[in-house]
Image 1 (cartoon, rainbow over the protein chains, first blue to last red):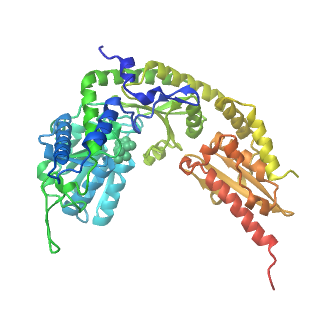
Image 2 (image 1 turned 30 degrees about the vertical axis):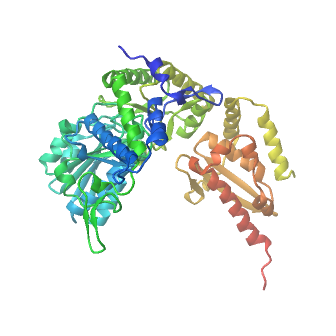
Image 3 (image 1 turned 90 degrees about the vertical axis):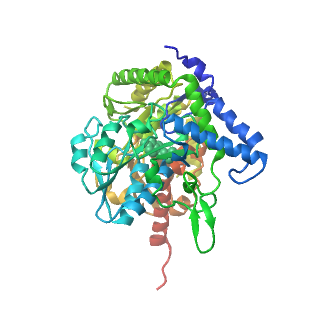
Length: 406
Length: 146
Ligand SMILES: Cc1ncc(COP(=O)(O)O)c(C=O)c1O
């Protein structure tokens, strides 16, 4: 395979650092991954020689920045195969994208007695906005079950999908279980029942090819910072005919067409949903990250990550008393586990002292801790720059932590 | 009876022998395992201080002008720190507990466990210990007028 991980690591300056005088082993990539110097350089270049507010000035800099920002939108559209750039709305991240849809779609389409269907494995960001909206609209939030293996229970999903369901929202990939949901099939089922579909792609875009037209979803969301881009930028894709029907989300500059104190008319897509000065550098950084992935080769990257995940699963499974949560045959990105008789907080604290960054706790999926009856989890999550040696070091550190704690 | 700061110094010295973080934590884990068992009847919801990662149970008694603490946690590293806090504060007077600044935790390098984001119940535990001290002081030591 033509994928040179050592060479790739050289592109990520942060990976060179140490913690507690040990080389850093960064395995918290599902929370946010590190940035290649191409992205860092893009941010620096923007502020050094291009910084200017967009869509407003008639001066050279503003025109350049506007063009660059709109080009970034096109790059994002190509990356997820959206039909047109105007269907890409820049947001702060997945959370804001979901809130935007929950608020505006709720206002326009959801009435008392309607239902929203999500799954048991959702991130809090794909639970709470729907809860709030259901509260406002008098609608009901329903939750499709999962199996012990962390796979969506399709029969239960079908049972809970009714003529009352206005919208179905689910993670393309679960941040805790790594489960890849059968997105295309779920979209088809939802559409057949007359419901719209939002896919939370936060954990998917870095690990899977995403084609919103093939998926046929109505909305797709992700965050730049989980795909090697900067924090504070994210994406909402929507089908044009639905976006056009949604009322404005936030009011302010840029989203208007004409303002008088009596009445305001609103700008067209996508600007209607981008009130105020946007995170221009963030969008350019995201574009640089997408280019970086392209230069590495998305397919090679995915294949490398899958092999690494299999290796990690095999390595960790061999540790006595270790239970892995999430054993879906379709899985990517994370290994979430616990050690018999050991609190996840203790394990995480010790792994940190070995120089290994993992996530512990409920991982913003508190219902899953209840489902599995544990106070929390330990999660190792991978990016293209992680290595087998790092997995070996993780396994060793788990063994040693276990000896210390038991 | 040693004062709070004398006890804090003893603990700082105990930790000074360890250069490596892992050795420090090994010691802390031992302290956690040595934490005197709390009477099960005190492990009730009312005494539970929940953090989002680990939780602490805290019970306090007042005898002859001094406060005695009993505690437990579901995580052993948290228990280790709980044990240190009990060694320092248990058996002291309410006023001494109220005044304690507990900077030994910083000195031995465990301050990260007290950052509010760690949410392991320890920050709330210290607050609760001081609240007990204040409550006992108010109840037993402030003369009420009649
Ligand atoms: C599945 C999933 N959805 C949503 C989010 C929220 O993303 P952000 O915090 O970038 O808005 C995350 C991030 O942890 C996630 O993993």
